[in-house]
Image 1 (cartoon, rainbow, N blue to C red):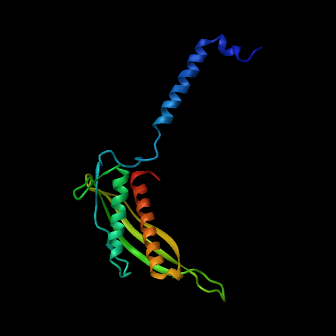
Image 2: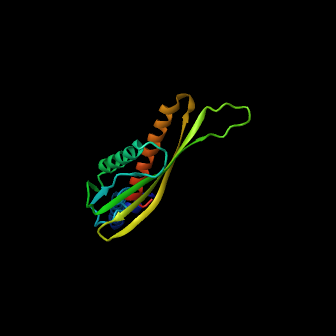
Image 3: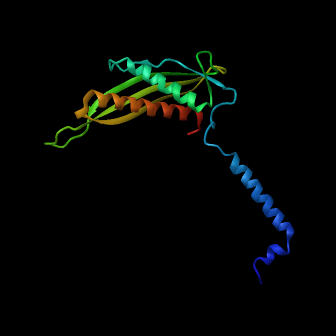
Length: 175
């Protein structure tokens, strides 16, 4: 018996199979990776200037962190960025910028250091007057000590940029 004859003698089965495949295709097309957790009543977001409670001693990093957050949200465009009175508000503070030696064995010369940056973030629903989340986002970056301050500053920038991306993902997705 020819296996293809099953479909040849039963046009209803072909129609049913086609319908099933169409429904599956529609549901697969509806799946999305972004926008999963942004409540539908939130259309705008205001991002406050990042505070610096790290006692690292360089106020430039709060400006850099603010700039990275604003750029990420502006480029993503899930929530419209506004200067104030947004449906949602994002408040953040740098709590830690530390420089640490990388673990060495006896007799080794230090060649690399580690920067650890932490940012406390509050995501607030101004419409319903409730906090959606409070989280600390961290990043560690390594840099060669031979390039001293320049490499350290770049490591801090990279850490803040990574954290800004993590904050955006936390706001717009369920992950």
